[in-house]
Image 1 (cartoon, rainbow, N blue to C red):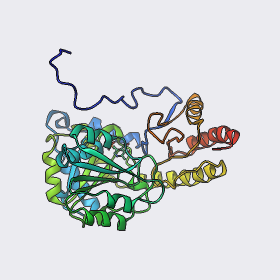
Image 2: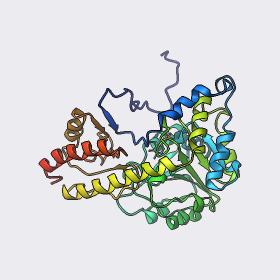
Image 3: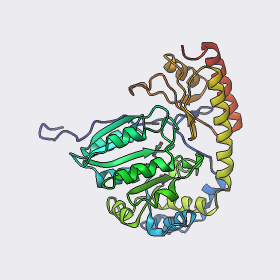
Image 4: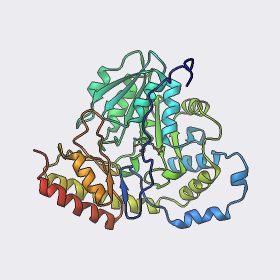
Length: 355
Ligand SMILES: Cc1ncc(COP(=O)(O)O)c(C=O)c1O
């Protein structure tokens, strides 16, 4: 790079998931969801060639998603994954001198969004109960965005409807971004309530329970004035035609397969939470498709031992306060779950949990 090139605005982050797993290896480190019926993919072969020739329109998918949620189509904006909906909102409502308020630990992209927009990240600890008072005490006239990830990544903890309302009403000058990408696994869907609050934007995805992370389809749902801003904060053709074709087919087919998948994940989650209790590893009561046990100082070794058995789980070595935890995606598949439970039993039963 020449000496005149200005330095980048934000620090480079390593790419996650840079390698495809080899045969027999199961990725339980990326919180992907159900596996769609392969027949879905075969439908692409019958698609009209315009799916690849023409610039793709998100309108039909927005209509389908709006019908599912019982809202008007102009209240839904489809983006290139939920990540991009969050990014657009942060770019629209944050700038140098403004604050992004989060409850920590949380989804790591928010640190990048703060850095890229030049905003100041203000973090409030979220250990068990949702930190309503802590967040309210940090709202200032400079708060541009309050990000609430519920179920939260990596803990799986949730915010209640009344807590969401209190925050939205206490900060009418801010946008409350409700990251609801794991909501299908949770007990309560806050979307309908959120839509009654004019400053809340709900961000959802087809990457998790719907099983289409490879298609990169997320969406924001909000008051039409807010969706108009999100729409104009990005490019007009955000998702590739084949991805939209597959997403439309998946959503039109209904949520039957999704309900089955969510039921399996919940059974695995209940069972694993009980096991972590028996192994003396504290584990938050997750409502996502993952659990976040405190396994102790041997966390990196346990991660490596699981990897040696072909089970990849997430260890946050570089994140302050998280290095003794693992985040384990629930496979949603009985055979894989049994393999995981047996491997953990061998490792954590032997170690006897945290000191
Ligand atoms: C909390 C949270 N928000 C957003 C995303 C991004 O989802 P998408 O695949 O739709 O971009 C993820 C992905 O893991 C996530 O955990």
